[in-house]
Image (cartoon, rainbow, N blue to C red; front, side, top):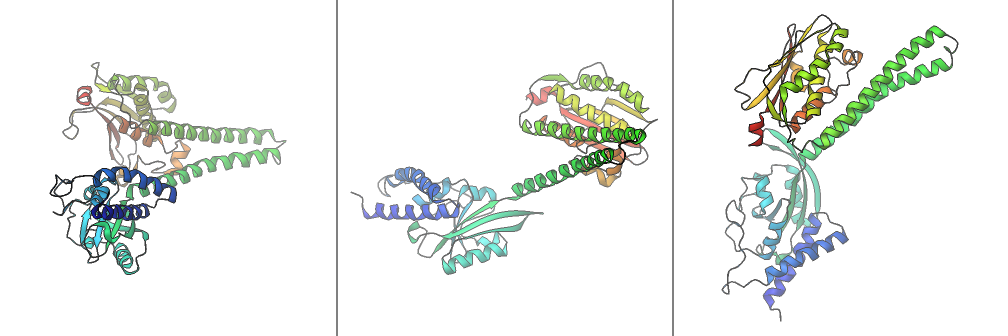
Length: 420
C-alpha cells in the first residue's frame, strides 16, 4: 500500500507533468501521451529505495545541475527533457537547470539570479508577472550573446508546491534559441522572393512580345523575327534559371553526405577546361590549362566537381570579356590550407571591388545585376559552387584586384587527410 511519501511524490509528478506540458505548449492529446510516457519512467523513480534504504537517484554533479540538493523525481523528469528548462524561485534565484540549459548557458549556476544570464527585460517581466498572477506566458525576445544578437522563445508557468524545490513558489521556464531557425526562415523568404523576381522579369517580357505579335506586329515579318529572337533569349534565361534552381536543390539534399570516391582533382579540372575551349574561342578568350600530369587525389563526386570548374571557368570567360586570358593552374601550397589540394582559375579581367568579395557566393548576389543578366548569368553559379564544396568539406578562396583580374581557388582535403 502506498505510503504518504509516495502519494506526495505522485502528486508532484502529476503537477509537474502538467506544468511541463503547458510549458512545452502541448495540446490535450499530446499532453496525455506525454504524461503517460513520463509516468512509466517516473514509476521506476518512485520505486527506488528511500534515503537510508539504499542509494537514491543522483544526477551528474558540476555546473550547477543539482546545486548540492538531494535529487528528486521532479528533477529527474526535468533532466530528461531535451529543451532548456530553468526552475526559478520567487526571489529570482535559479533553483535548478537541466543539462540542456547548461549547454545553452555554460556559465549558469544554481543560486545565481536568472537575469544575470538572460538580460532581456521582456523575459524578466514575464517571470515577475507569472509569480504575481500565476498565469502562463509565451514570449519571444532578443538578447546579446557575446558579440551577436540571438532570438529566443520562452514559456513560463508556475510549478505546483509539491514539486520539491522548497516552500517558496517556483516558476518553470522553457527557453529555446531560435536564432538559426529565424535565419533559415529569412533566407528561405529571400530566396523565394528573388527567384520569383528573376522569373517574373523574363516571363513578363515574353508575354508582352506574344501580345504584340498577336496584334500590332501580326503582319510585320521584320518585327516578328526581331521579337521572336528576344523571346528565345528570355526563354533561355528562364530555362537556365530553372536548371540552376533544380541543381541547387539536389545539391542541398545531399550536402550532408560526404563523397567517398577517390578522384583526381587536377584531372577533373583539366578535362572540364579542355571541353570548354570551343566556347572560349567563340567568346574571343584565351583559355590556358597549366596542370601537371601528376594526380592530386581527393575524395569527391566527379560530376559535382566538374560542375564546380565549369561554373568557375564560364564565369571567368564571361566577366573577363573578349581579348582576355583565363588560366587553370595548380595553386601553390598555402599555410592557411594545410593538407589540401588546390586548383586556381585566374583571369586578367576588370577585377571585383573588395567590398563585394565576401558576398559573391550568396544566392542571386551580383556585382552588376544588369551586366550579369545581359551575359546570361542567373546569380546562382557561385552559390552552387559553395554548396558543392561544403559537401566535400572544401573551401573557395577569392582574390581580386580592380583593373588586374581575379583568382578563384578551390581547396579540397587530400584523400589521405579526408580518409583519416
